[in-house]
Amino acid sequence: MPKLFLAAALAAVLQHAPAAAQNSNCGDRAAIVSQLSGKYGETRQNVGLNADNSLVEIFASAATGTWTILVTMPTGVSCLVAAGQNWQVVETEVAPTGNPA
Image 1 (spheres, rainbow, N blue to C red):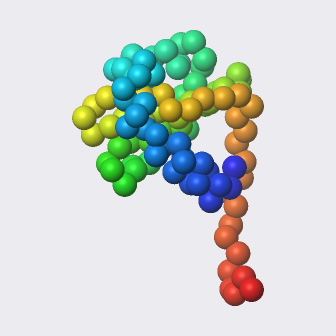
Image 2: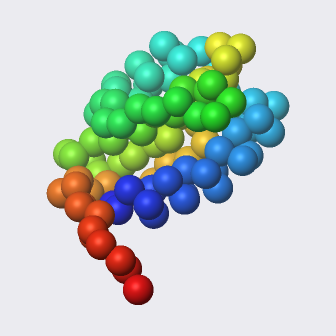
Image 3: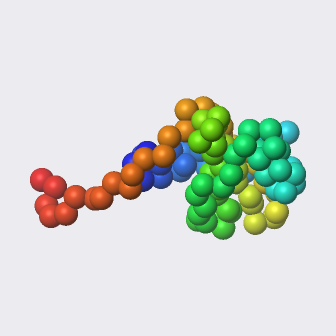
């Protein structure tokens, strides 16, 4: 997935992360990660820090094709904010150089 598309998708998802902390998709990070690993075979594939200092992690499994985005707030609350199927690893795309016009 191109980095720009991934960044835009994450930005849209993360706008709703604080609201997600109020629902049942949130809990202890260690317990959530254990379930992602045990039930779906997912491991952490990517990690980044959001502008509000929340930790954004993408877990995925090449074997099952499932993926999950987990956001851990600075308060320590972790929330599942998105999940899906058909995860694919793609080669890193190189940004074009020069004048794009």
